[in-house]
Structure formats: structure tokens, C-alpha cells
Length: 190
Image (cartoon, rainbow, N blue to C red):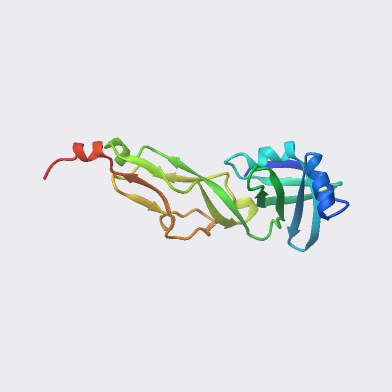
């Protein structure tokens, strides 16, 4: 899994005034928690956070706050309801000996038989929540759709990956090939 570096500085105050002051200085209030560390409140610049958030990829984040390093994953982001400005970010401290839950992107591989027959591929899930040790986490989850016929569906329960537990509900639909008018017209009449 890809790693990305992020620099932060410890927050002096935690009230509304301090938070507003940080946001006015293009700093995002953040918190780091988990695996036996005390909650660490810090800020990071908007420009350093954007490559982590505005991408379909998932990262392990090598967080450095005032000289101390932590291996983390992004846990939660809060956006302003009107302006979509980033208001707050939660990071989770990762212990390499314990499984971590993270959302991984899903990549479709192959040419579907149903699409070749005129159907339309519908991708319903772009990310799956999984649990695994940090060293076992791939960059993405590959779903081979070569054998997916017209009107067929791939569910989460149909997927399995070594050393990874999928936490997304098994009944969730990952993708399907929907019959179109053109595919129905091409089908042989009985």
C-alpha cells in the first residue's frame, strides 16, 4: 500500500476561537487517536491534506507532529454543508501487529461478456471496507468481470482476497451488467 507523508503542528488551544483562527490561516484542525496513545490535537495545511482526500486511492499516512512520527490511516472527514470546506479530520494510529479497518478502491478488470452482447456495466461500489494487517493491505481490490454475463451481478459475498476480511455487508452489489434495449433486440427470439 502507498505511503504519503504529512506534517502537522500541535494545537495550542482547542476552543471555537482557536479553531476559527486556524481555519483562517489555511490550517485544518485534526486529531490523532487509537492504539494506546492519548488524543493528539494538531493542525495541518490545506495544501498538504488535499492530495490525501481528493483521490480515489487509499494511503497509509506517515504523520509527523512536532518531531514525533506516527503511522496512521484517515478515519473521518467533516465538510462544511454549504461550501464543502474541510472542517475537521480524524486520523487513527496504526499498530502493525493488529488489523486495521480501511476503505480500499475497487478496480474492474477484463471485458465482460454481457457488455460485448450490448449490455451496460453498472459499478455500484467504488470502495470496500476491509480489515487486515498493514503489511497485507493491497493498493486496491481487483474484481475480474470477464465472465460476467448479461443480467448477472457480482455481490460482495462472491469476492475473497488472501489475508483480508471484507467488512462491507455480503449482500451489497459491487457491479452488474444490465440488459439494454439494443441487447434485447440482438437476443435470439424463441
